Image (tube, rainbow, N blue to C red; front, top):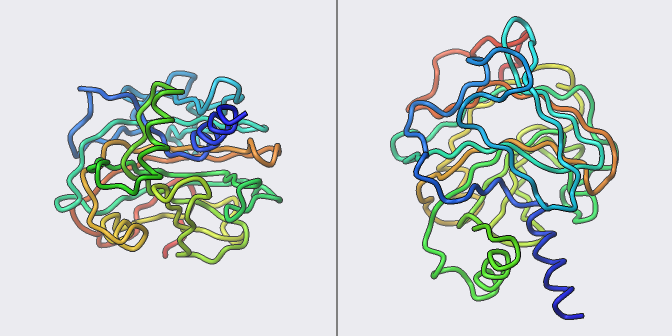
Length: 263
C-alpha cells in the first residue's frame, strides 16, 4: 500500500511538472529557440522540438502545425489528456533575461482552477526548466526527485517556472504546485477578456524566478509548451506562436496573427 501511494504521488508530480527532457548534448545555444513559423503547416513539428508524455496511462494532447494569418503556429487539442512539447536550450539569463511569445485561446476550461490539485489544468502553458544544485534542496524534495527518477527513469529539473492562463486568479499571482515547491506557476493572463485574440507577452524570467523561488536562477535547460485537461476531463484548445529569448526589451509591440493586445 505504501509503495502504491508513493507511485501515485510521483505520477501526480509528473502530471503537473514542466517538460523535462532526457539529458542531451543537443541543447541549442541562443539566439535560436525553435521557431514554429519557420516550418510549413502539417503534422511534423519544427526541428528540435520533442513530444513529451506525462505518463503511460495519460492520453496525450494532440499537437500539429497549422496556418494562422499566413504563418505556421502550433495547434494543441486536449480532451481529458496531458502531454507537451519540449525544446532543449542553454540560456544564461544574465545575457538573455527576456522571454517573448504570443498565444491564443478560443475558450477557457470552465472548471479549471490551478490553486486546486483536482482541477489543475490550463488551455496554454509556457514552461521554463532550470539547472541547479539538487543537493541543496530540502530533504523532502530530494526524496521525491529520487522516487521520480526510479519510477519514470527521467530526471526532474532543479526548478520549473510555468506561465499560465487562469480563469479567475488575478494576473501576476504566483501559485505553488500542490506536489512540490520546485514548480511555481505565474498567472500572466486571467479571465476571458483576451479569449480569441493573440496577446503578446514579454517576461523578465530572471525577476520572475527570483519572485517565485526567492533565489537566483541557474541556467535554463529547456522551454516547453503544454495544453492539458486531464484533471477536469474537459476539452481545451490552444495555439502557440514563436517563443524566443531576448537580450533587451523591444521598443514596440511585435505584430502577430491578428492584432495582439499591447500590455
